[in-house]
Length: 335
Image (cartoon, rainbow, N blue to C red; front, side, top):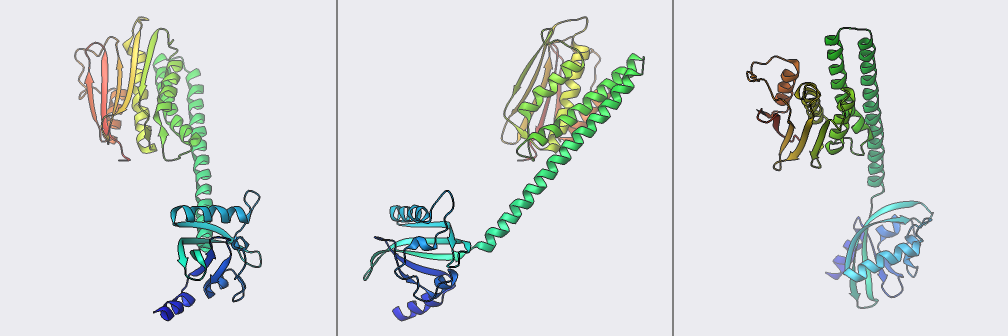
């Protein structure tokens, strides 16, 4: 059995070495280990183990050896990746598993099994570089979409200045705000570290502030109360949500506080359960008309909100007591 184990050790695909624990000197290396590090048979025996460790400006080969040796002796075994160096100076990566063993001849030794993972590491680096390149391109796309939407908004603004019809002016301004709500999503993605998510806790205050400025409403006249849980939405969910907030807050600013009446608007966004999200837009204004029927109402704003709620596969509830409250319940697409 001992002879069989010796044959297996000599011919196995992984490199094996024995390093004396007291002085970190090689006492054995199988042929695969010697080939891996480009040493002649028996050449490593008696050499200090740091000869195979790669050093840089931050860590010397001995620093690497001490870190590995300390971990193994402390825990009895360890699995790690280590940057090594061949005899000719070529650096390469190894995956290693090492443990402590009491050898009858050499005393306490560290038994390490090494496998060359340089190709795997290079493949990982290529994938990381490719992902970084795609991330930069995606950021650029979001930036350009935001800029193009800004151009469209500017064209509408120019058209608005050329008309004297207040109805047309109002329509153009509403269109500008809808475009702004979409552009803001792309701006948040452009500036976000995570291109898959939009931080809605930052998005809602920015959007509502823009609407107050657009309709020239003072925050001292109409108070804005925002309560938003930390929530991240993907772009497919964020754009409909942004448009819904845009429509309902705009409607409140335009119609809820007639005759310079003061009041407040509340925007709440929170997670009801693991998968359900709640969006509430509420005001204490004059409320909806007595004959209001959401199913029969054909105004663009309500029709748009209903379509967006349907797109989110959500549920819309309207309460018109003591002002107006819109409650939208929908499922987070990420769960």
